[in-house]
Image (cartoon, rainbow, N blue to C red):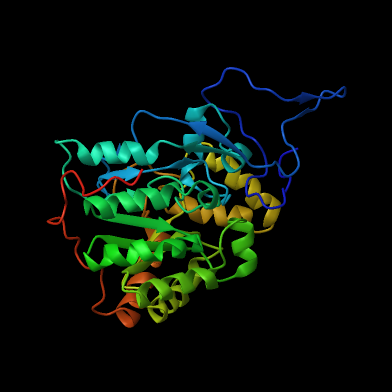
Length: 350
């Protein structure tokens, strides 16, 4: 039963895990294998990894190290490139990604150990390079808040990308980090069309709330920008100028974008969703996505995979550039201050 819409979920089915030789399901007498289930409940899986810092060698991603306190994401964004990483944990990139959230309970202890290590080189740490550090699980487990306290304790720079208004809970820490030029925040916004937002990102904050987050951060002196991601021709690409203008009005210091790329299992998930929600436009949208990736729906090449190439990708770049020049002239993130790192910190928060 592919193409089944689940209330509050993005994926329409459970694609097979490419690393598993067998898969489980319900077998009916008529021979139909049903791998779906209505509205799966969220469950949390405890995990105690040996390290928490991930290194990045990609030149088209603006960070060298990242911290992900959670794997999987209840936001349920149907296009999320991180979905296929759930397969490494033995789960499906589909509904499992949204409903089975791996919680790394020892993440704060591991980050403190990394900062205490004599070979730690002071550099900005990204929260999170994979799934959203302020997803709904954070309300319960508060791992991101503990991690931010560590960055403040050691005076280590941190950058954050999120689409959840929960970040305002930690405005006290963010404000103090900002006073030392130790924090940058990007708020990811895909569309101001609320119907489209609910379909693409069923458990995220509204665009209005996200722009309000940018406003509150800016008013508190926390430098904040907007990431328009992903740009999907035929769905939200035409909104780029309006999104840039709204970002500038909210006080954003930067606006950037990425284009849709359907890596691995994400291709099937997005295709099924698109045909279920926009059946009459699906083929045209997919064809335009392919023009951005050399005839494919994804491109793994550095400096190409995030921004694409070709006529449609160039149109997106030009639309953003013109809108930025018009609405955000002279703005930009202040440089991080890496001179204030305190080797050993000052106190223990545990």
